[in-house]
Image (cartoon, rainbow, N blue to C red; front, side, top):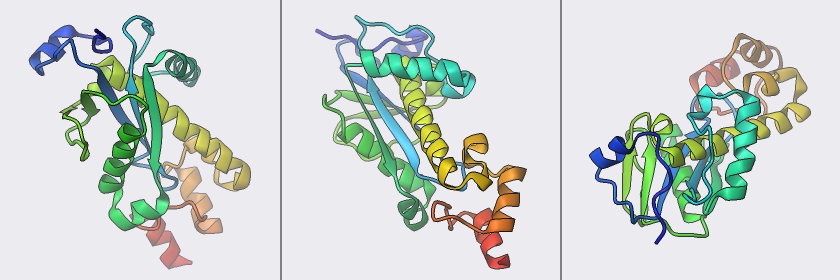
Length: 209
């Protein structure tokens, strides 16, 4: 019998009604706030027989540490999937619904069907299996931490690739967030095909051009 993937504080799972016999997956997203690019989501089932040291909320880790853990997760996880919702879907559905769609795709795309899904935040996507939302789950439950790392690193890789196509925008630096550098580039050069036109800062700049 496989056990649930490791957790930073077992008392948290006990409070949430944790069943150690479950094959549980953690789910998290990356890219809700940026002005450009898809929103990414990842789903991960960790293997308790192959523990990964150092898992934590991806935002609290250095880039080097995230990339190291990314490789470890890919190698050792029972199953994982990284999925996304496109820029067009974000503009059509809004960012919340697009995020839920990306999460749904991540869970559905795994080679192993989880018995339960733990989702970072306060909402869960529509899934075929039971799901529980855990606020700050990426700091509390290791499989959610692992999902946050896969999603973050995958989206950062996307930004680095787009930076090579549109180097004047600085995507490799700001990762799509509305920094002063990014806003200046938007005002001087307009929006790229990868910008979210439904986001107010982008829409405002487009009206001025």
